Length: 111
Length: 113
Figure 1 (spheres, rainbow over the protein chains, first blue to last red):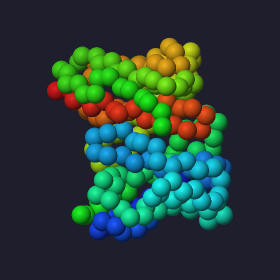
Figure 2: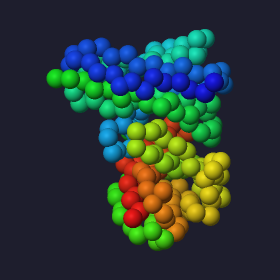
Figure 3: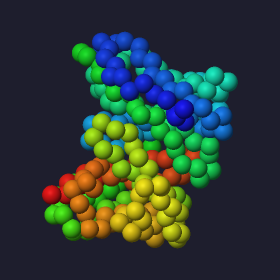
């Protein structure tokens, strides 16, 4: 079983839709959870950063972490064509431990 | 978010030459620097981890003599691809870390002919 599983998609939604992106993981030692957005031919951009279980909201984006289920989610409300990108979940145990990435989900928001 | 620069943004070179990629964290000091490689339509692959002033730790399958990493200061790290070959053509991305958060550079696209 891979450490982090993420459905690669592709996922296509109409403008204004609510988007749900998810990752599952197997290592209960992960403590820090991140979502990155990567546009084509660009480096990843940090979107959300959460520690332990719970929700975190930033504008149209909400990150959820359920450590008991080893499940993390990113919700995008009122999706826009500019949200079209690949979204990567990333997890780490903390300290100087490296990030473990999901494969990324390619999202297209159609106008 | 943090500001990270990479130079050059793209490079085309002949097989057998060496290419140096610079990564700078412009507004914070990065005690740890990660270097990734990304092939088309694939996720990021960690190549190596370096701490300022120490030798880099390479991931399995990454040749340390081919991919030379220097992390001389808290704001600058370099990756040198020595004797590059076409199979080294890829997108190279640095990632300076501050505590548990990693930020990414814009990437360097390398094409080896």
